[in-house]
Image (cartoon, rainbow, N blue to C red; front, side, top):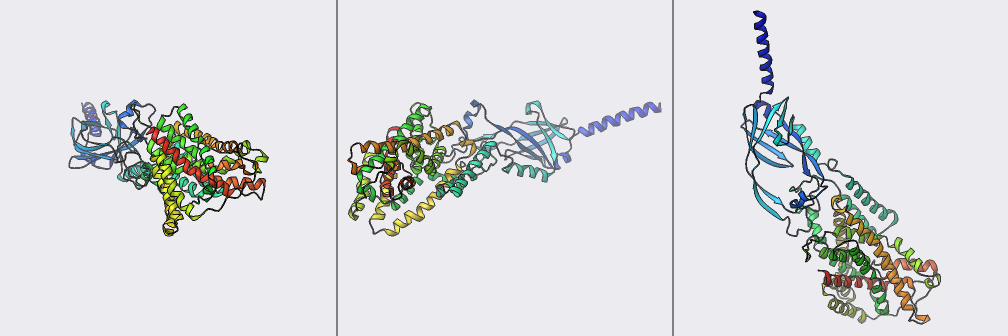
Length: 549
């Protein structure tokens, strides 16, 4: 009898102990925090959430979700850094969580760089459904309808470390960021080691590094740090690119530092600047053949002019991610890839142009000496920007922001009475804008935006367009020589300077001329088509805008 009584008591104690182990207690809930590694968050929020369900291959990641229970029966839930509140209670050995309604603002086009008025938003009230959890072996376990999520109890300090880790770049790093960091370092290396356009490549390279520091991102969450997040400092600076007001300021500085004397003394060399623009229109055709929409193709084509500011200006008007075509299709945002391609090839002028020039010219042609340019009067220099502005602006009014600032800057220089303004425009102003333009264009190459098939196509087209533009200038000079007498012939190498990379293309021609004949100086002759190319690319941009806007 005693043995039977002891057996019954033992079984009762065992069952009671098991029941006590699974019994929920307020003290169990209010000690520490309960953390779950929850999946399903969109890692790349540079999308329209309305269409995310229709997209395949959208990367999703796991993020920490934290539950914190208070002794007064209230609780907080942090989900992707958004806090929800409510009341908890215990019933039938389960933890029941009733959420309070929460007013939220849905970011319809999260991190859209071209949403000029900020996010497209929608205010709404979210009512999360009741959540039921059970206490099993020291863990809170959700019901099957709650995706079976398991919350483990951790110390508050450890929960804080989880939160800290999620905000680090290491936690958000991807292979795409690695690729872009290598590209940024390569730009800086080329600028320092080989002196390839350091004024451009160092700001752009540094911007690439800045733009590819990984950060916590999920849909409807804005840290106000990245260049594509409205409210951030970088985003405010980037508006100068998106809305196209950096390029005209660059043109103001270019005009203030440019001497058009060589062009005025030999106007026929302006035709070489026009001949080099063939790269723009052939690239346009190539982009259309690769499947780009007409506005996108027009923006890509301008890379052939080797003019970075013009490329940014026209892409901000045509390939900006905002414009809607007649068929309802929204154009892609290609500002970043186009700008990087244009400036990259401008920096590579000393590498790309010499082989093309040598391929298309003979030794005899490279030795041609040209007549020295005549002296130009001050009156001619003053009249040129006025006449040039009126003539080119009437031909292509849509390029007025570029042409107007270019000729305005030149008039400041040549008038002789606004020296302080000319010095400011050609030094301090253009240096500041160049830094801001370079750093923001570089930062716009965020891996999840930049590493796309379209970017690869743009770089291939850019390289081809630069070669075609150089060839167009050289061939144009050779054609012109067919109509000139022996003493008036043009050295065909001068035609290569018709691209808008001022003064790098002219410098390449000068160096190649001296290599062939140390006494043959071609710089002044090459500057004529070089500055004509600046005007020509701006006019070509205006023509494209007239057709494609």
